Amino acid sequence: MKIETVYQSMQDIITAGATPMQLLRVTANLRLQTLERHLKTISDNKIMDGSFKGVMHAEKAFGSVLSPKILGTYEAELVHEIMPILPGKSCFLDIGCAEGYYTTGVAVKSDIPKVIGVDINAAALTAAKNNAALNGVDHKCDFFAQLADAIDDIGSDPLIMVDVDGDELTVLKGLFEKCQDGKFNTLTMVIETDYWPDHSSNKDDIVDELLRHDFQITKIIEQDIRLRFSAISKRLTRSYLDQALLGLEGRPNDQCWVIATRPAGGS
Image 1 (tube, one colour):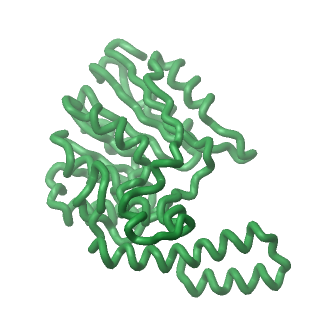
Image 2 (cartoon, helix red, strand yellow):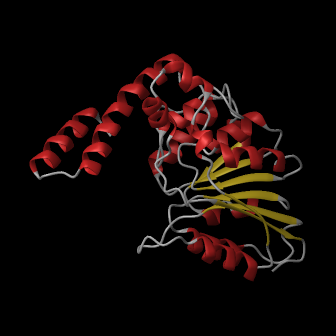
Image 3 (cartoon, one colour):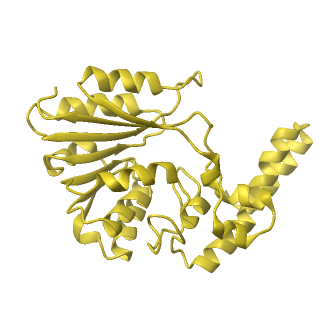
């Protein structure tokens, strides 16, 4: 969101009789713009810490928040879990790859031979391609707008991540239809939960769908608020509020990640 847009939003909601929560959200967004500009300057758009430290990052985040990605705290709970899974995998497939935070990070920081990103947002897909090229890993990265175009290239032992902002069940059903029996030795999946239109979580529905297809639920990763703070943000500002703004990812506290594995022979 541009600063001009934030200012206009503040004016509009004050005129309309804004609630304290509405004012807090707008002013926090305005403060974050200032903090983020400084962060981009001092980082030179390189991820500053965490598992993807040193990876060049696109100047914009699609569908998420930029500052935690630059700090290296973004989804740290998940990154810590998936990096040890990667050795020996045939491919990392990221469905909903956005600007390529994971596709580029995994391509740079692991020995996995192939990385594929899928996203229906053309601008995000272009950013992901550019990000891979910027980091010199475009030779092992492919990107597609449609999942159907990616399936044939993922090999027999892939790690598939799904983050599609509420459309997880549709993607899973489509994926299972396209993945014929015997295609995989082992299929490992990571799915970010989201919400139905009535704001209820789709976690149980995701788990049920996985179990119906002979997956074993390996782990459900809950968020840890402590991981939103980092030594870098602490050095940048003495304000706990500013540190929180830099690290928060704009997600409800009950959103989580499901890791599941299906051995050979699953349907």
